[in-house]
Amino acid sequence: MDRPGNFRVYFLSVVLATGALIVLLREHRPSFLRPDLHLCAYVSTGDGSVTVVDLVKLKAVAHIPVGPGLSGMREHPARPEILGVNSPGGYVWIFDARAYQVSARIPVGPLPYALDFSPDGSRIYTTTSGNDTVLAIDIPTRTIVARGHTGREPVLAHVSPDGKSVLVVNRREGSLGIHDAATLALRNTVAVVPLPDDVAVSPDNSVAFVMSRSEPRLSVVDLRRSVLATTLDLAGKPTGMLLKPDGGELYVISPEAHGLQAINTWTHEVGDTMILGSAPTRGVLSADGSLLYVSDTAAGRVTPVDIANRRIIRDPGKGFPIPAGDAPGALRFDPEETLLLVVSQGSGDLAVIRVRTNFLVTMVPVGDRPQDLAVKLYGNKEVTR
Image (cartoon, rainbow, N blue to C red; front, side, top):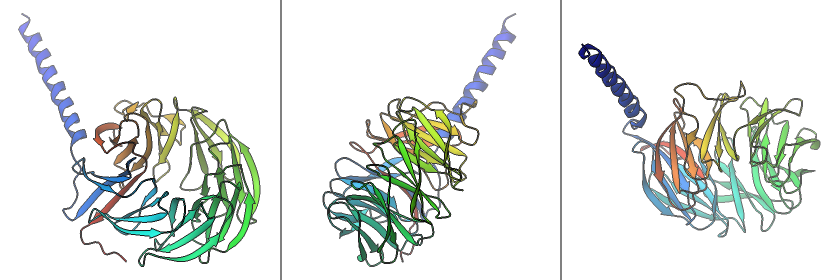
């Protein structure tokens, strides 16, 4: 009498198990590219190396020594190259993505920390905080083509969207220097929050936002008049800020505030506050500005946020919370925004998450104390100019 009922139970169990297996295999399947294309992540580690992770094979394929104190790593927007700085050695390094080797080391001066590209990718700009200098390097010739004097202890050079200005964050002086991008001559200096260390610029080049990880305040600089427009009070000391692609909102992340604050960039007013977790630290925005992922260093997870509707994504079928190893920090999308990549500093891994389902695909070991992250899609026959 129970056999038909048991058969239905067994049949349903098999169907559910098969469905679950299909979903699991689909999430763990590798990505596919044309044979002449390569997609890799590049992670700097505490031993002064760069680990190359093949994002199709989902495994580390190289661990290349570069030098101690690596920082400011960025992928070139057009060339198959990864660039960064070696702070103790005082040089900019260029990594050839196709050859898996460092192709150039360009001496720049004492204590560089970060770099930025001109809009056309022909130049990089960096600062040397040890001698208060900003420099421009021509990438094709690997030569320094301009120098400018800055305020005390410049830690960051940021190119304006129109490519006409280079904004230099002078940490010890507490100022923002506005330099001509072609000559690096100083146009103006604006006093900002003490010990500044990051800057974001509106798409129309009219406003700069300057933050300090030491201060629960944010400076708003009117770039057209070269004056301080206002100083905004924050809920806690920030660790990162993200400008919406259309420039309408700025999102400031703060572990002290356990979340983020949204700032209206037109009215310069602090708006909504979202509580996200224990210690939200870093974030990444989708290209359309609708989706935000925030790494939580203390909780070991990544929080997905529907930023337009100000809600944490907990939809059925969407992973939450997303595990990301021990002390996740820097995070990036791949070029198609199908994968989210998260550096786990404590466990020495790169977490690979599928964006469509917020599913953790795998954790790839990359080395001790990973820090920075870059992602590059390139071809075998790509021409460097």
